Every structure is written in structure tokens, then in C-alpha cells.
Amino acid sequence: MNQEVKNEGFLDTLALSELPPDSQKSVFVRTTRVLLCNTDAGLFAIEDRCTHAFQPLAGGDIEDGIISCPKHGACFDLASGKPTNNVATRPVKIFKVRVRNERIEVDPTPVPS
Amino acid sequence: MKQGMSSEVSPLASELLKMDSKELPSGLTMHSDYVPPANPIPFSRYYDPAFARLEYEKLWKKSWQYACRVEDLPNIGDRMPYDVGAELSYFIVRSGANEFRAFNNACLHRGNRLVSAQVSGSSIRCSFHAWEWNPDGSLKNVPSSWDFPGVDADKYRLPEAKLEVWEGFIFINPDPDAAPLSSQMGLLPEAFKDRGHGDRFTFAHVSKKIRANWKILQEAFMESYHVVETHSDALPFSGDASTKYDIWPSENGDISRLITPLAIPSPHLGDKASTQVAVDGLAQLFAMAMGLEPPKIDASKGNARAQLAAWRRETMGQALGRDFSERCDSEMVDTTQFFMFPNFFPWFGEGLPLIYQFLPYGDNPNESVMNVRLTSPLPGNGVCPPPVKINYLDFDDFFSDKAPEFGLAAHIFDQDLSNLGNIQLGLRPAHSAHSKNTLGRYQEQRIQHFHNLLSKTLGLE
Image (cartoon, rainbow over all chains, first blue to last red; front, side):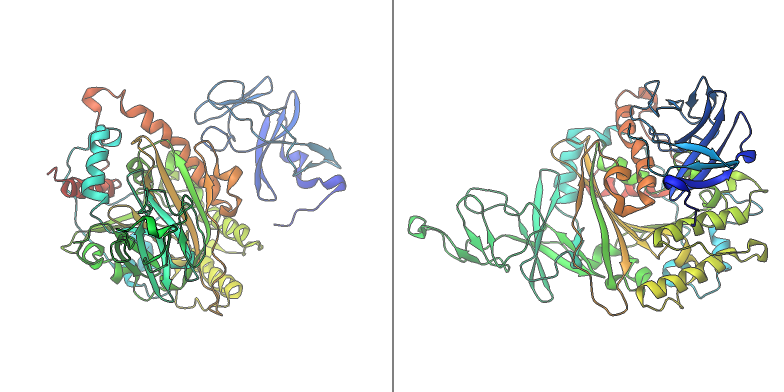
């Protein structure tokens, strides 16, 4: 899968117009599935894989910067990836995300937790 | 009995096989209408120490069991342990160019464990007092032999278990009176005939400790009914509910098989699910695993699986320098798994070329070991790569973190493993009226069959 490498190692994902406010979309960043979330609190990129049962987080409710896994209810802080209830105990990987020229770009290297 | 669920865009596996662009091998044409009798499976089987004791005495000490593969031991003197809990331990050694032996893994002096890992060398030497044996089991040296007048070479050969090799798989049987391996294999040799399993090699090998009984582990992998919940992200390209299950009882051993078709949407996704998404989803996984760009497949032509299989034949052929032109679509795309009692799971074809082996661990029936391998056909030049090291994962390790060699399959195993410890935790507190399995009549019939065989073997019928 060819993804155009932008400045500072960021990879192109999709147009900002494809991710309107209060929406989320799962994309591949190289071989990792990443959930892009456009929320009131900003734009976030979190691995689309819950650390509880390793299922996708996509489709989970987002409230106050917290995403709730649609399967079994594990909750994670979108900004840090840390679990906020006890369903999961391990953080989810998060990634730096930015918008350049109306395109959403993601750094494929996870932010150290 | 209804045999699976289909949708307008996702036929039953048995129907997909009829549409294959190539001739099917016997391993896929075989069919059975046998339905195992429904007998109760109490949860106590999974945690009762007395039941585990019975298994050691009547199952593990009496059965043919897959121990390892020939490519693990390429040179004379190479050896590795085979442990069944804390009760049975053997080591398998290549004792000649085409000869293997299995010995009790305890020194004849004071019982020290002789082999704890994959090692090489011309003699088997005890780490305690340096007693030594040759790879054929004959006594080589006893330090201060003057002090052991009763120790002679005949009496102090290493005790040996029966051993046979089939298609590169090494089997042992601790029972000196056991009938030949073929007595336990049923139709397995016919199913694997001419498919080259002897010409494969292991390229990834994980040994994972899990906090669940060994039967809980293997039963979790005997059905595709769990895909809808446990692997929900695979539904767009997995024919979970359209899986074909078959069981062949015979006088010469019982085997069973599942064929889960891929590159079609799950019937759970309904009649409008996309066949294009289905084939693209699987193509992307195959392409990632090989570091290639995914192929462009047009599902509107109606033969998406055949197109994907053709791409697989071409790319695998180029990568390995081998000819896959006679391999059918299902072999290149689907996940087909055979089972031979009590715990041998050879997979069939290239869709997901795994080998499973589930074993008790230590003295605790609530813990076990899952040994899983990924295999590949040998390169066209016939040269087998050096043996891969076993990657030992502890109870709290994850495949995704510690077994990158499993690629995208690591994610699938982590999904499965996230359930297993919790299953074990639920067994003892279960309400007395429901402290037994309630199995799906078709989709979980292989589990019923396995327990029927287990009951027979343990004398519980």
C-alpha cells in the first residue's frame, strides 16, 4: 500500500472533507488500522483496536474526549489512549495527527504512552 | 439438520467448492453425514484434578500424539523436549540421517531433566554429574564408573517411546504395546495425499502459556461460530456461518474437518453485503503478509475468489520458485482445518497454513500451552531454511507485542486468547443447572465428537 510520505514522516490519509465534525473513520496507516475522530475537543488518531478483546473501536460513542468500545464497553481517553474504566487495563496506541492543505496526515510512529 | 447459513451473496462452503476453477483434492471432496450423539459435557472436565489425572493415565500415556516436525531437528544429535504437563516428558532426537527417536527426559542416575530446549550435539549429557548417552540412546559415559558396578550399557540405555513420522510430523506413543500410528489416523492420510505436507517447513513457532484447560483452548479453535463476536472485524471477508463441518468415524481412528470460506462476506451481514469489499479485504491481508501491492479484482465478474486464487498462485509461485498451478481456489484462499484425536490440528492449503497443538501445563488443570506454527511449502530449490527458534510467550504476553513473526495473524490470536482465561473463570461458579456445555448441533459438532472420543478413551461411556 503506497501512502505518500509528507514532511516529518507524516503519511497522507484522507481529505478533511471526508471527516466532518462529530464523525469518525477507520483508515490504514501502513499496516495499522487507525481510527480518525473529529470531535469537539479536536482531531484524534487512535489505533482502531480495543486492548480488551482486540476488536475495532470504530462506531464507539465519543463523549468528552472519551471513546467507548461498542463491543464490551471499555473506555479510552482519545488524547492519551489510556483506559478510563476497568474493562481494559492496557492503553491503546495513539498517533500524532495534523491537517495540511485540507488533508489529514498521521505520523505512523505511535506516541509513547 | 440444517448445515450452515447462507445469504444471496455468500453461498455455503459446499456450494463454493463446486464453483472452484480447479479440480479439488480429496481433502476437500471428502464428505460425511455422520452426526455425533449428543452427550453431556460437564464443566468439571475442565478443572477437576481427578479428571486430569485420568487423562494422563488413559489418554496421554496411551495415545499417539504429535510432538514436533522433522525440520526442527536437521542434524544428527539435534533434540528438543516434548512435555505433557508435569507428568510426561520426552525428548525427540535425530539419531540418524532419516531416523528419529523419543526418550524419557530424565537422567537414569538421579532423575535430572536432560533436555529443556532445542539443542545440538553428538551426546546427551546430564548437567548434574555428566552422565552421557549417544543419540541412539546407548550409554556413552559414566564418570567414576568404578563407583557404579551395577550400571551396564544394556540396562542403562535411555528408555524409549514409540515413534513414527508422517508427512514431516513426528508422533510418539508412550505405550509400548500401542498399535501403529495408522491405527489412530483414520482418513487423514487419504485427505493429505499428494498435497506435499512432507515438503513444508515451519517459519514461525510460538509456545504460549494460557490460563485455561487444554480442552478449552482447542475447542475454541474447532468452530467458526465464534467469529461473529470474537473476530467481528473479519466478518466482511469470512464465511463463518457458511462453514462446512464433517466428522469421519472409523475403526482406524476418527478425524474431523472444517472449511471456512474466505473472500466472501459473512452471511450475518445480509443479502446486500459487498462481494467486492469481501475480496478486497482478504486480498489486502494476503498482500500485506507478502509485502506486495494488493491485486485489482473485479467482483462484478462473479468469480472473485478464483481471481484472488490466481493472484495467489502467481505471487506465491514467484516468491517460492514453485508451481501452484494445480492447487485449487479453496486451497489458495480458504481456511481448512483437520483434527486428529486427541490434540493434533494440521491445517490444509495456503489460506491459513497453521499447525496447532494444545497440551496441559504443569500440574494445574486450569493452565495449558498452545503451540502454534505457521508453515510454508519448501522453496523450489528444495533447501530447507534453518530451524526457527520457538518463541515462548508467558501467560500475560500478547502475540501482537511479542510475536511479530505471525504478522496479521497475531491480532487474530489475541482476539481468541482474550476469551480463554475468562471461560476458565466462569466454569466453577456456573449455576448447577447449567454447569455443562450447550453446543450448537451443527457448528459445534466437532467439540461434541471430541468429547465422545475422550469419554470412550477414558472408559467413561
